[in-house]
Image 1: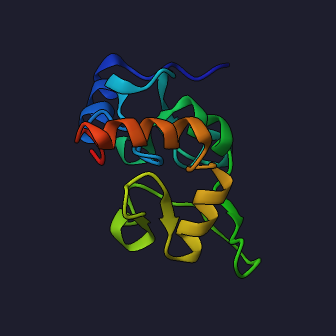
Image 2: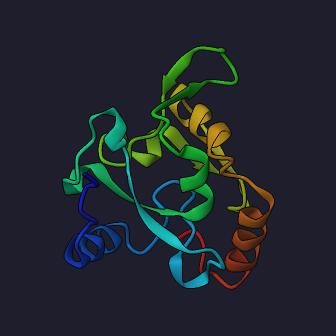
Length: 140
């Protein structure tokens, strides 16, 4: 039997906690051309639950690339590492912005693997960041 969908209350709580931004690439809902969804950080197929601590707001690009993955290869060391977990890993430890705020850099194996696996610097996201930074709407 299929699991019940998340409630509107759960979805609203996740979006508010994320400040209406993708918790991976930090795109903002109000400026994104793509839809956003609530994703399971640890997928149900790997034992994840519908508890708020396991839910993240994600743009379609990040959600599609993450899919059910919880690990990826660090492109520097070649080691398999955990992907960024928005509830457990502080963003500032694992990521940094380029001087013009358009490129997200991974500072740690987790950060680098996440940037690579989720393509956090894909062309459309970088272009959106560039435009929003010019009008002082990015970073969020």
